[in-house]
Length: 534
Image 1 (tube, rainbow, N blue to C red):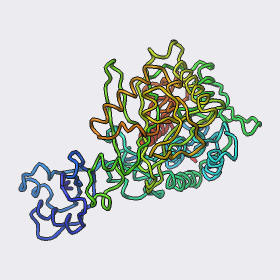
Image 2 (cartoon, rainbow, N blue to C red; image 1 turned 180 degrees about the vertical axis):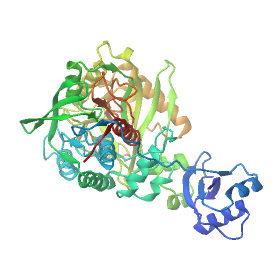
Image 3 (spheres, rainbow, N blue to C red; image 1 turned 180 degrees about the horizontal axis):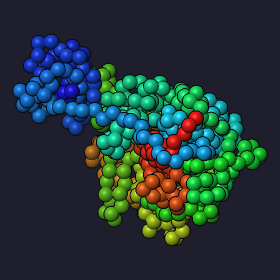
Image 4 (cartoon, rainbow, N blue to C red; image 1 turned 90 degrees about the vertical axis):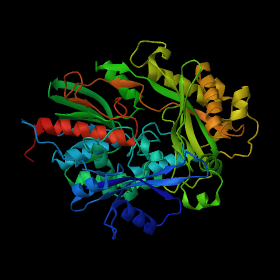
């Protein structure tokens, strides 16, 4: 197979233009059949934006063609094809049990089901349709916060109410990342996620995809139970765990040879239970900060320039910004949502946090992104393994109090001055949930506030107008990643037991794709150890 890289095309190119470029690069008279391998936007020079495209071509005599052309942009390419591992030598006596139906649990369950292992999955929240209605009622003020089903908990995990961003820095030598994307396409995602440089699904599209995967797990013999909270466990022996589940007040237990903990980064009660039971847990760095909103059309102008053609042919612009502060702190944009919404993402009473999300069209009035600052164990104030979690909780209480239970917001100009905002400027907040004017400096430590201000002012040098005094800040963004890591060995088990910590909550992932990949890794570890005769 041949891959052609670095095909530069104008933003208004047509397929015939790309066909012509391919023929010229290969010195052929007829355009061969090809597939898009990667499509990205080069916006490094404003008003000179272009697409950069790579294509794959399955053609005879590919080796001789590449040698003859002697072009660094025309290379031989071999796709990594993912395969499940061979079965292990131990008989599986008790079905795998998975706690959590976010990306890690969903993909661990699917790949175990494909191997014939018939996993049993427990999710503390509701199915995705019921969950969506409940969350929207909470945002609209019609229902109180449900502690077991909210933006953080429920089918699909925290990623359900996000932009569905699939970009990741993990490499794909094993083919797992490609397997994740191909699986999402198989169950309903648009095929473009296979080649777009920064693929995304959108909150609206995620729902059907997640349901389709869940139904596939069930069709393969797996089981999925909602409103089922993991309450306790007992180590029967090295290879058997007794799992205790609470279903709306009724307790049941189940034996398993593999307990997969895909619990997500917000399962704080579960973290405490695991720590009390003696599981090895350590502190982990993470990041916290605020969300910032600009008009999307302003971000488009900052990134692309002001040519009218860009409005027609380019998608809503995104950005990724980093800055090292004078005191050594890192401040950076995180989970940027073009044409999106800030959402009340709380999961505990009297504590408040926010997140960002976009629908698949990304057609909201505003762009938003978290602006977060790195937090290290030195900032936790304690050597307790859960100290980072306790810090999150304290700062979320600050945010709840600052907003009197609503999302606290502040104009950037007022945040710099340290005064409470009294009126909105030219940017109208796009927030799911009620909001209230506040002084956000009261929510966060001084080192975070100072870093955010320094960072936004620095970002303005790269995106002229970013430090807009009318930009809307909201807070706090506290759930960027897990504040703990549940230690596991090379075989993916913890503390020499049949417990498999998995995904973002366990400290081994940082987003939808990497969590799904970790779920696959854990499934592989179980498949490689056991076999089943079912």
